[in-house]
Length: 362
Image (cartoon, rainbow, N blue to C red):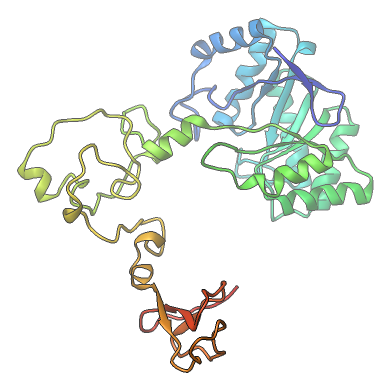
């Protein structure tokens, strides 16, 4: 196992971390359907210790705190506390009281003590805010986090799942008042979700903040291919029938000729939108345009607007014969001038738009 420093800190962590989102009592409040109980989760902790995975990450909201309890028991069973870099999070709803969720001072002080009790330890190596809290002032949040660090309950601070401008506000408040800064950022990053690469990851690299990405490869597979198996999460199953003839189960075409049953997984969570049928009909039978119900407009490549747009090459009627430069002219109503390089000769290129459609610049 390789070990690296977390950001610019001196804390050494294993390059691979053990995410404990899947462990905990599956019968607890708001538990994930795929969560594993104490008995089923033990082999994962045992193998992590054998392979040298010493960075374990959980959260207070995972399986309503039972994940932290399970992690605490696993540390005592398979390792020593000083061998494990223990990380947990705060923000999610634990109860209906004023300190049950969010990043207010009351919530942070209450939840850190509750996490310490569930984990069975007297300190947390990395305490992360799970989300940005718009209802709490950044100064209140950062001061409360600084106080639990100075109290010895937390060693380092981290953040998770927020926009770059939100993370910048929190770091700026800490710098301005001399409070403890965040040393890590845990974000979702995979082949389908990559917006953080533009600003958030670049800012972390500039600030020396360590990045703890959660690939969520299984979730990405569900979103792309779907899941119709009984063990799949409920949010991956479609609750609305398809409106396309060759993907709708209730269509007359499919009912007239029985279709052999295919594999239960994978299947698109939005049938008829992003799915690819095993045997699509001829192009003449396919509906056009294909409209995604998650978008307010049809896809650009098949929308009526873009279909009716076309570039037209025409000769300017007033251009002198034999000239190499087009004669200046004023675009007519309903057209947009194409300002790219003109071909030689008295020609111009106009974008013909359908009636009632205009062009705006941003």
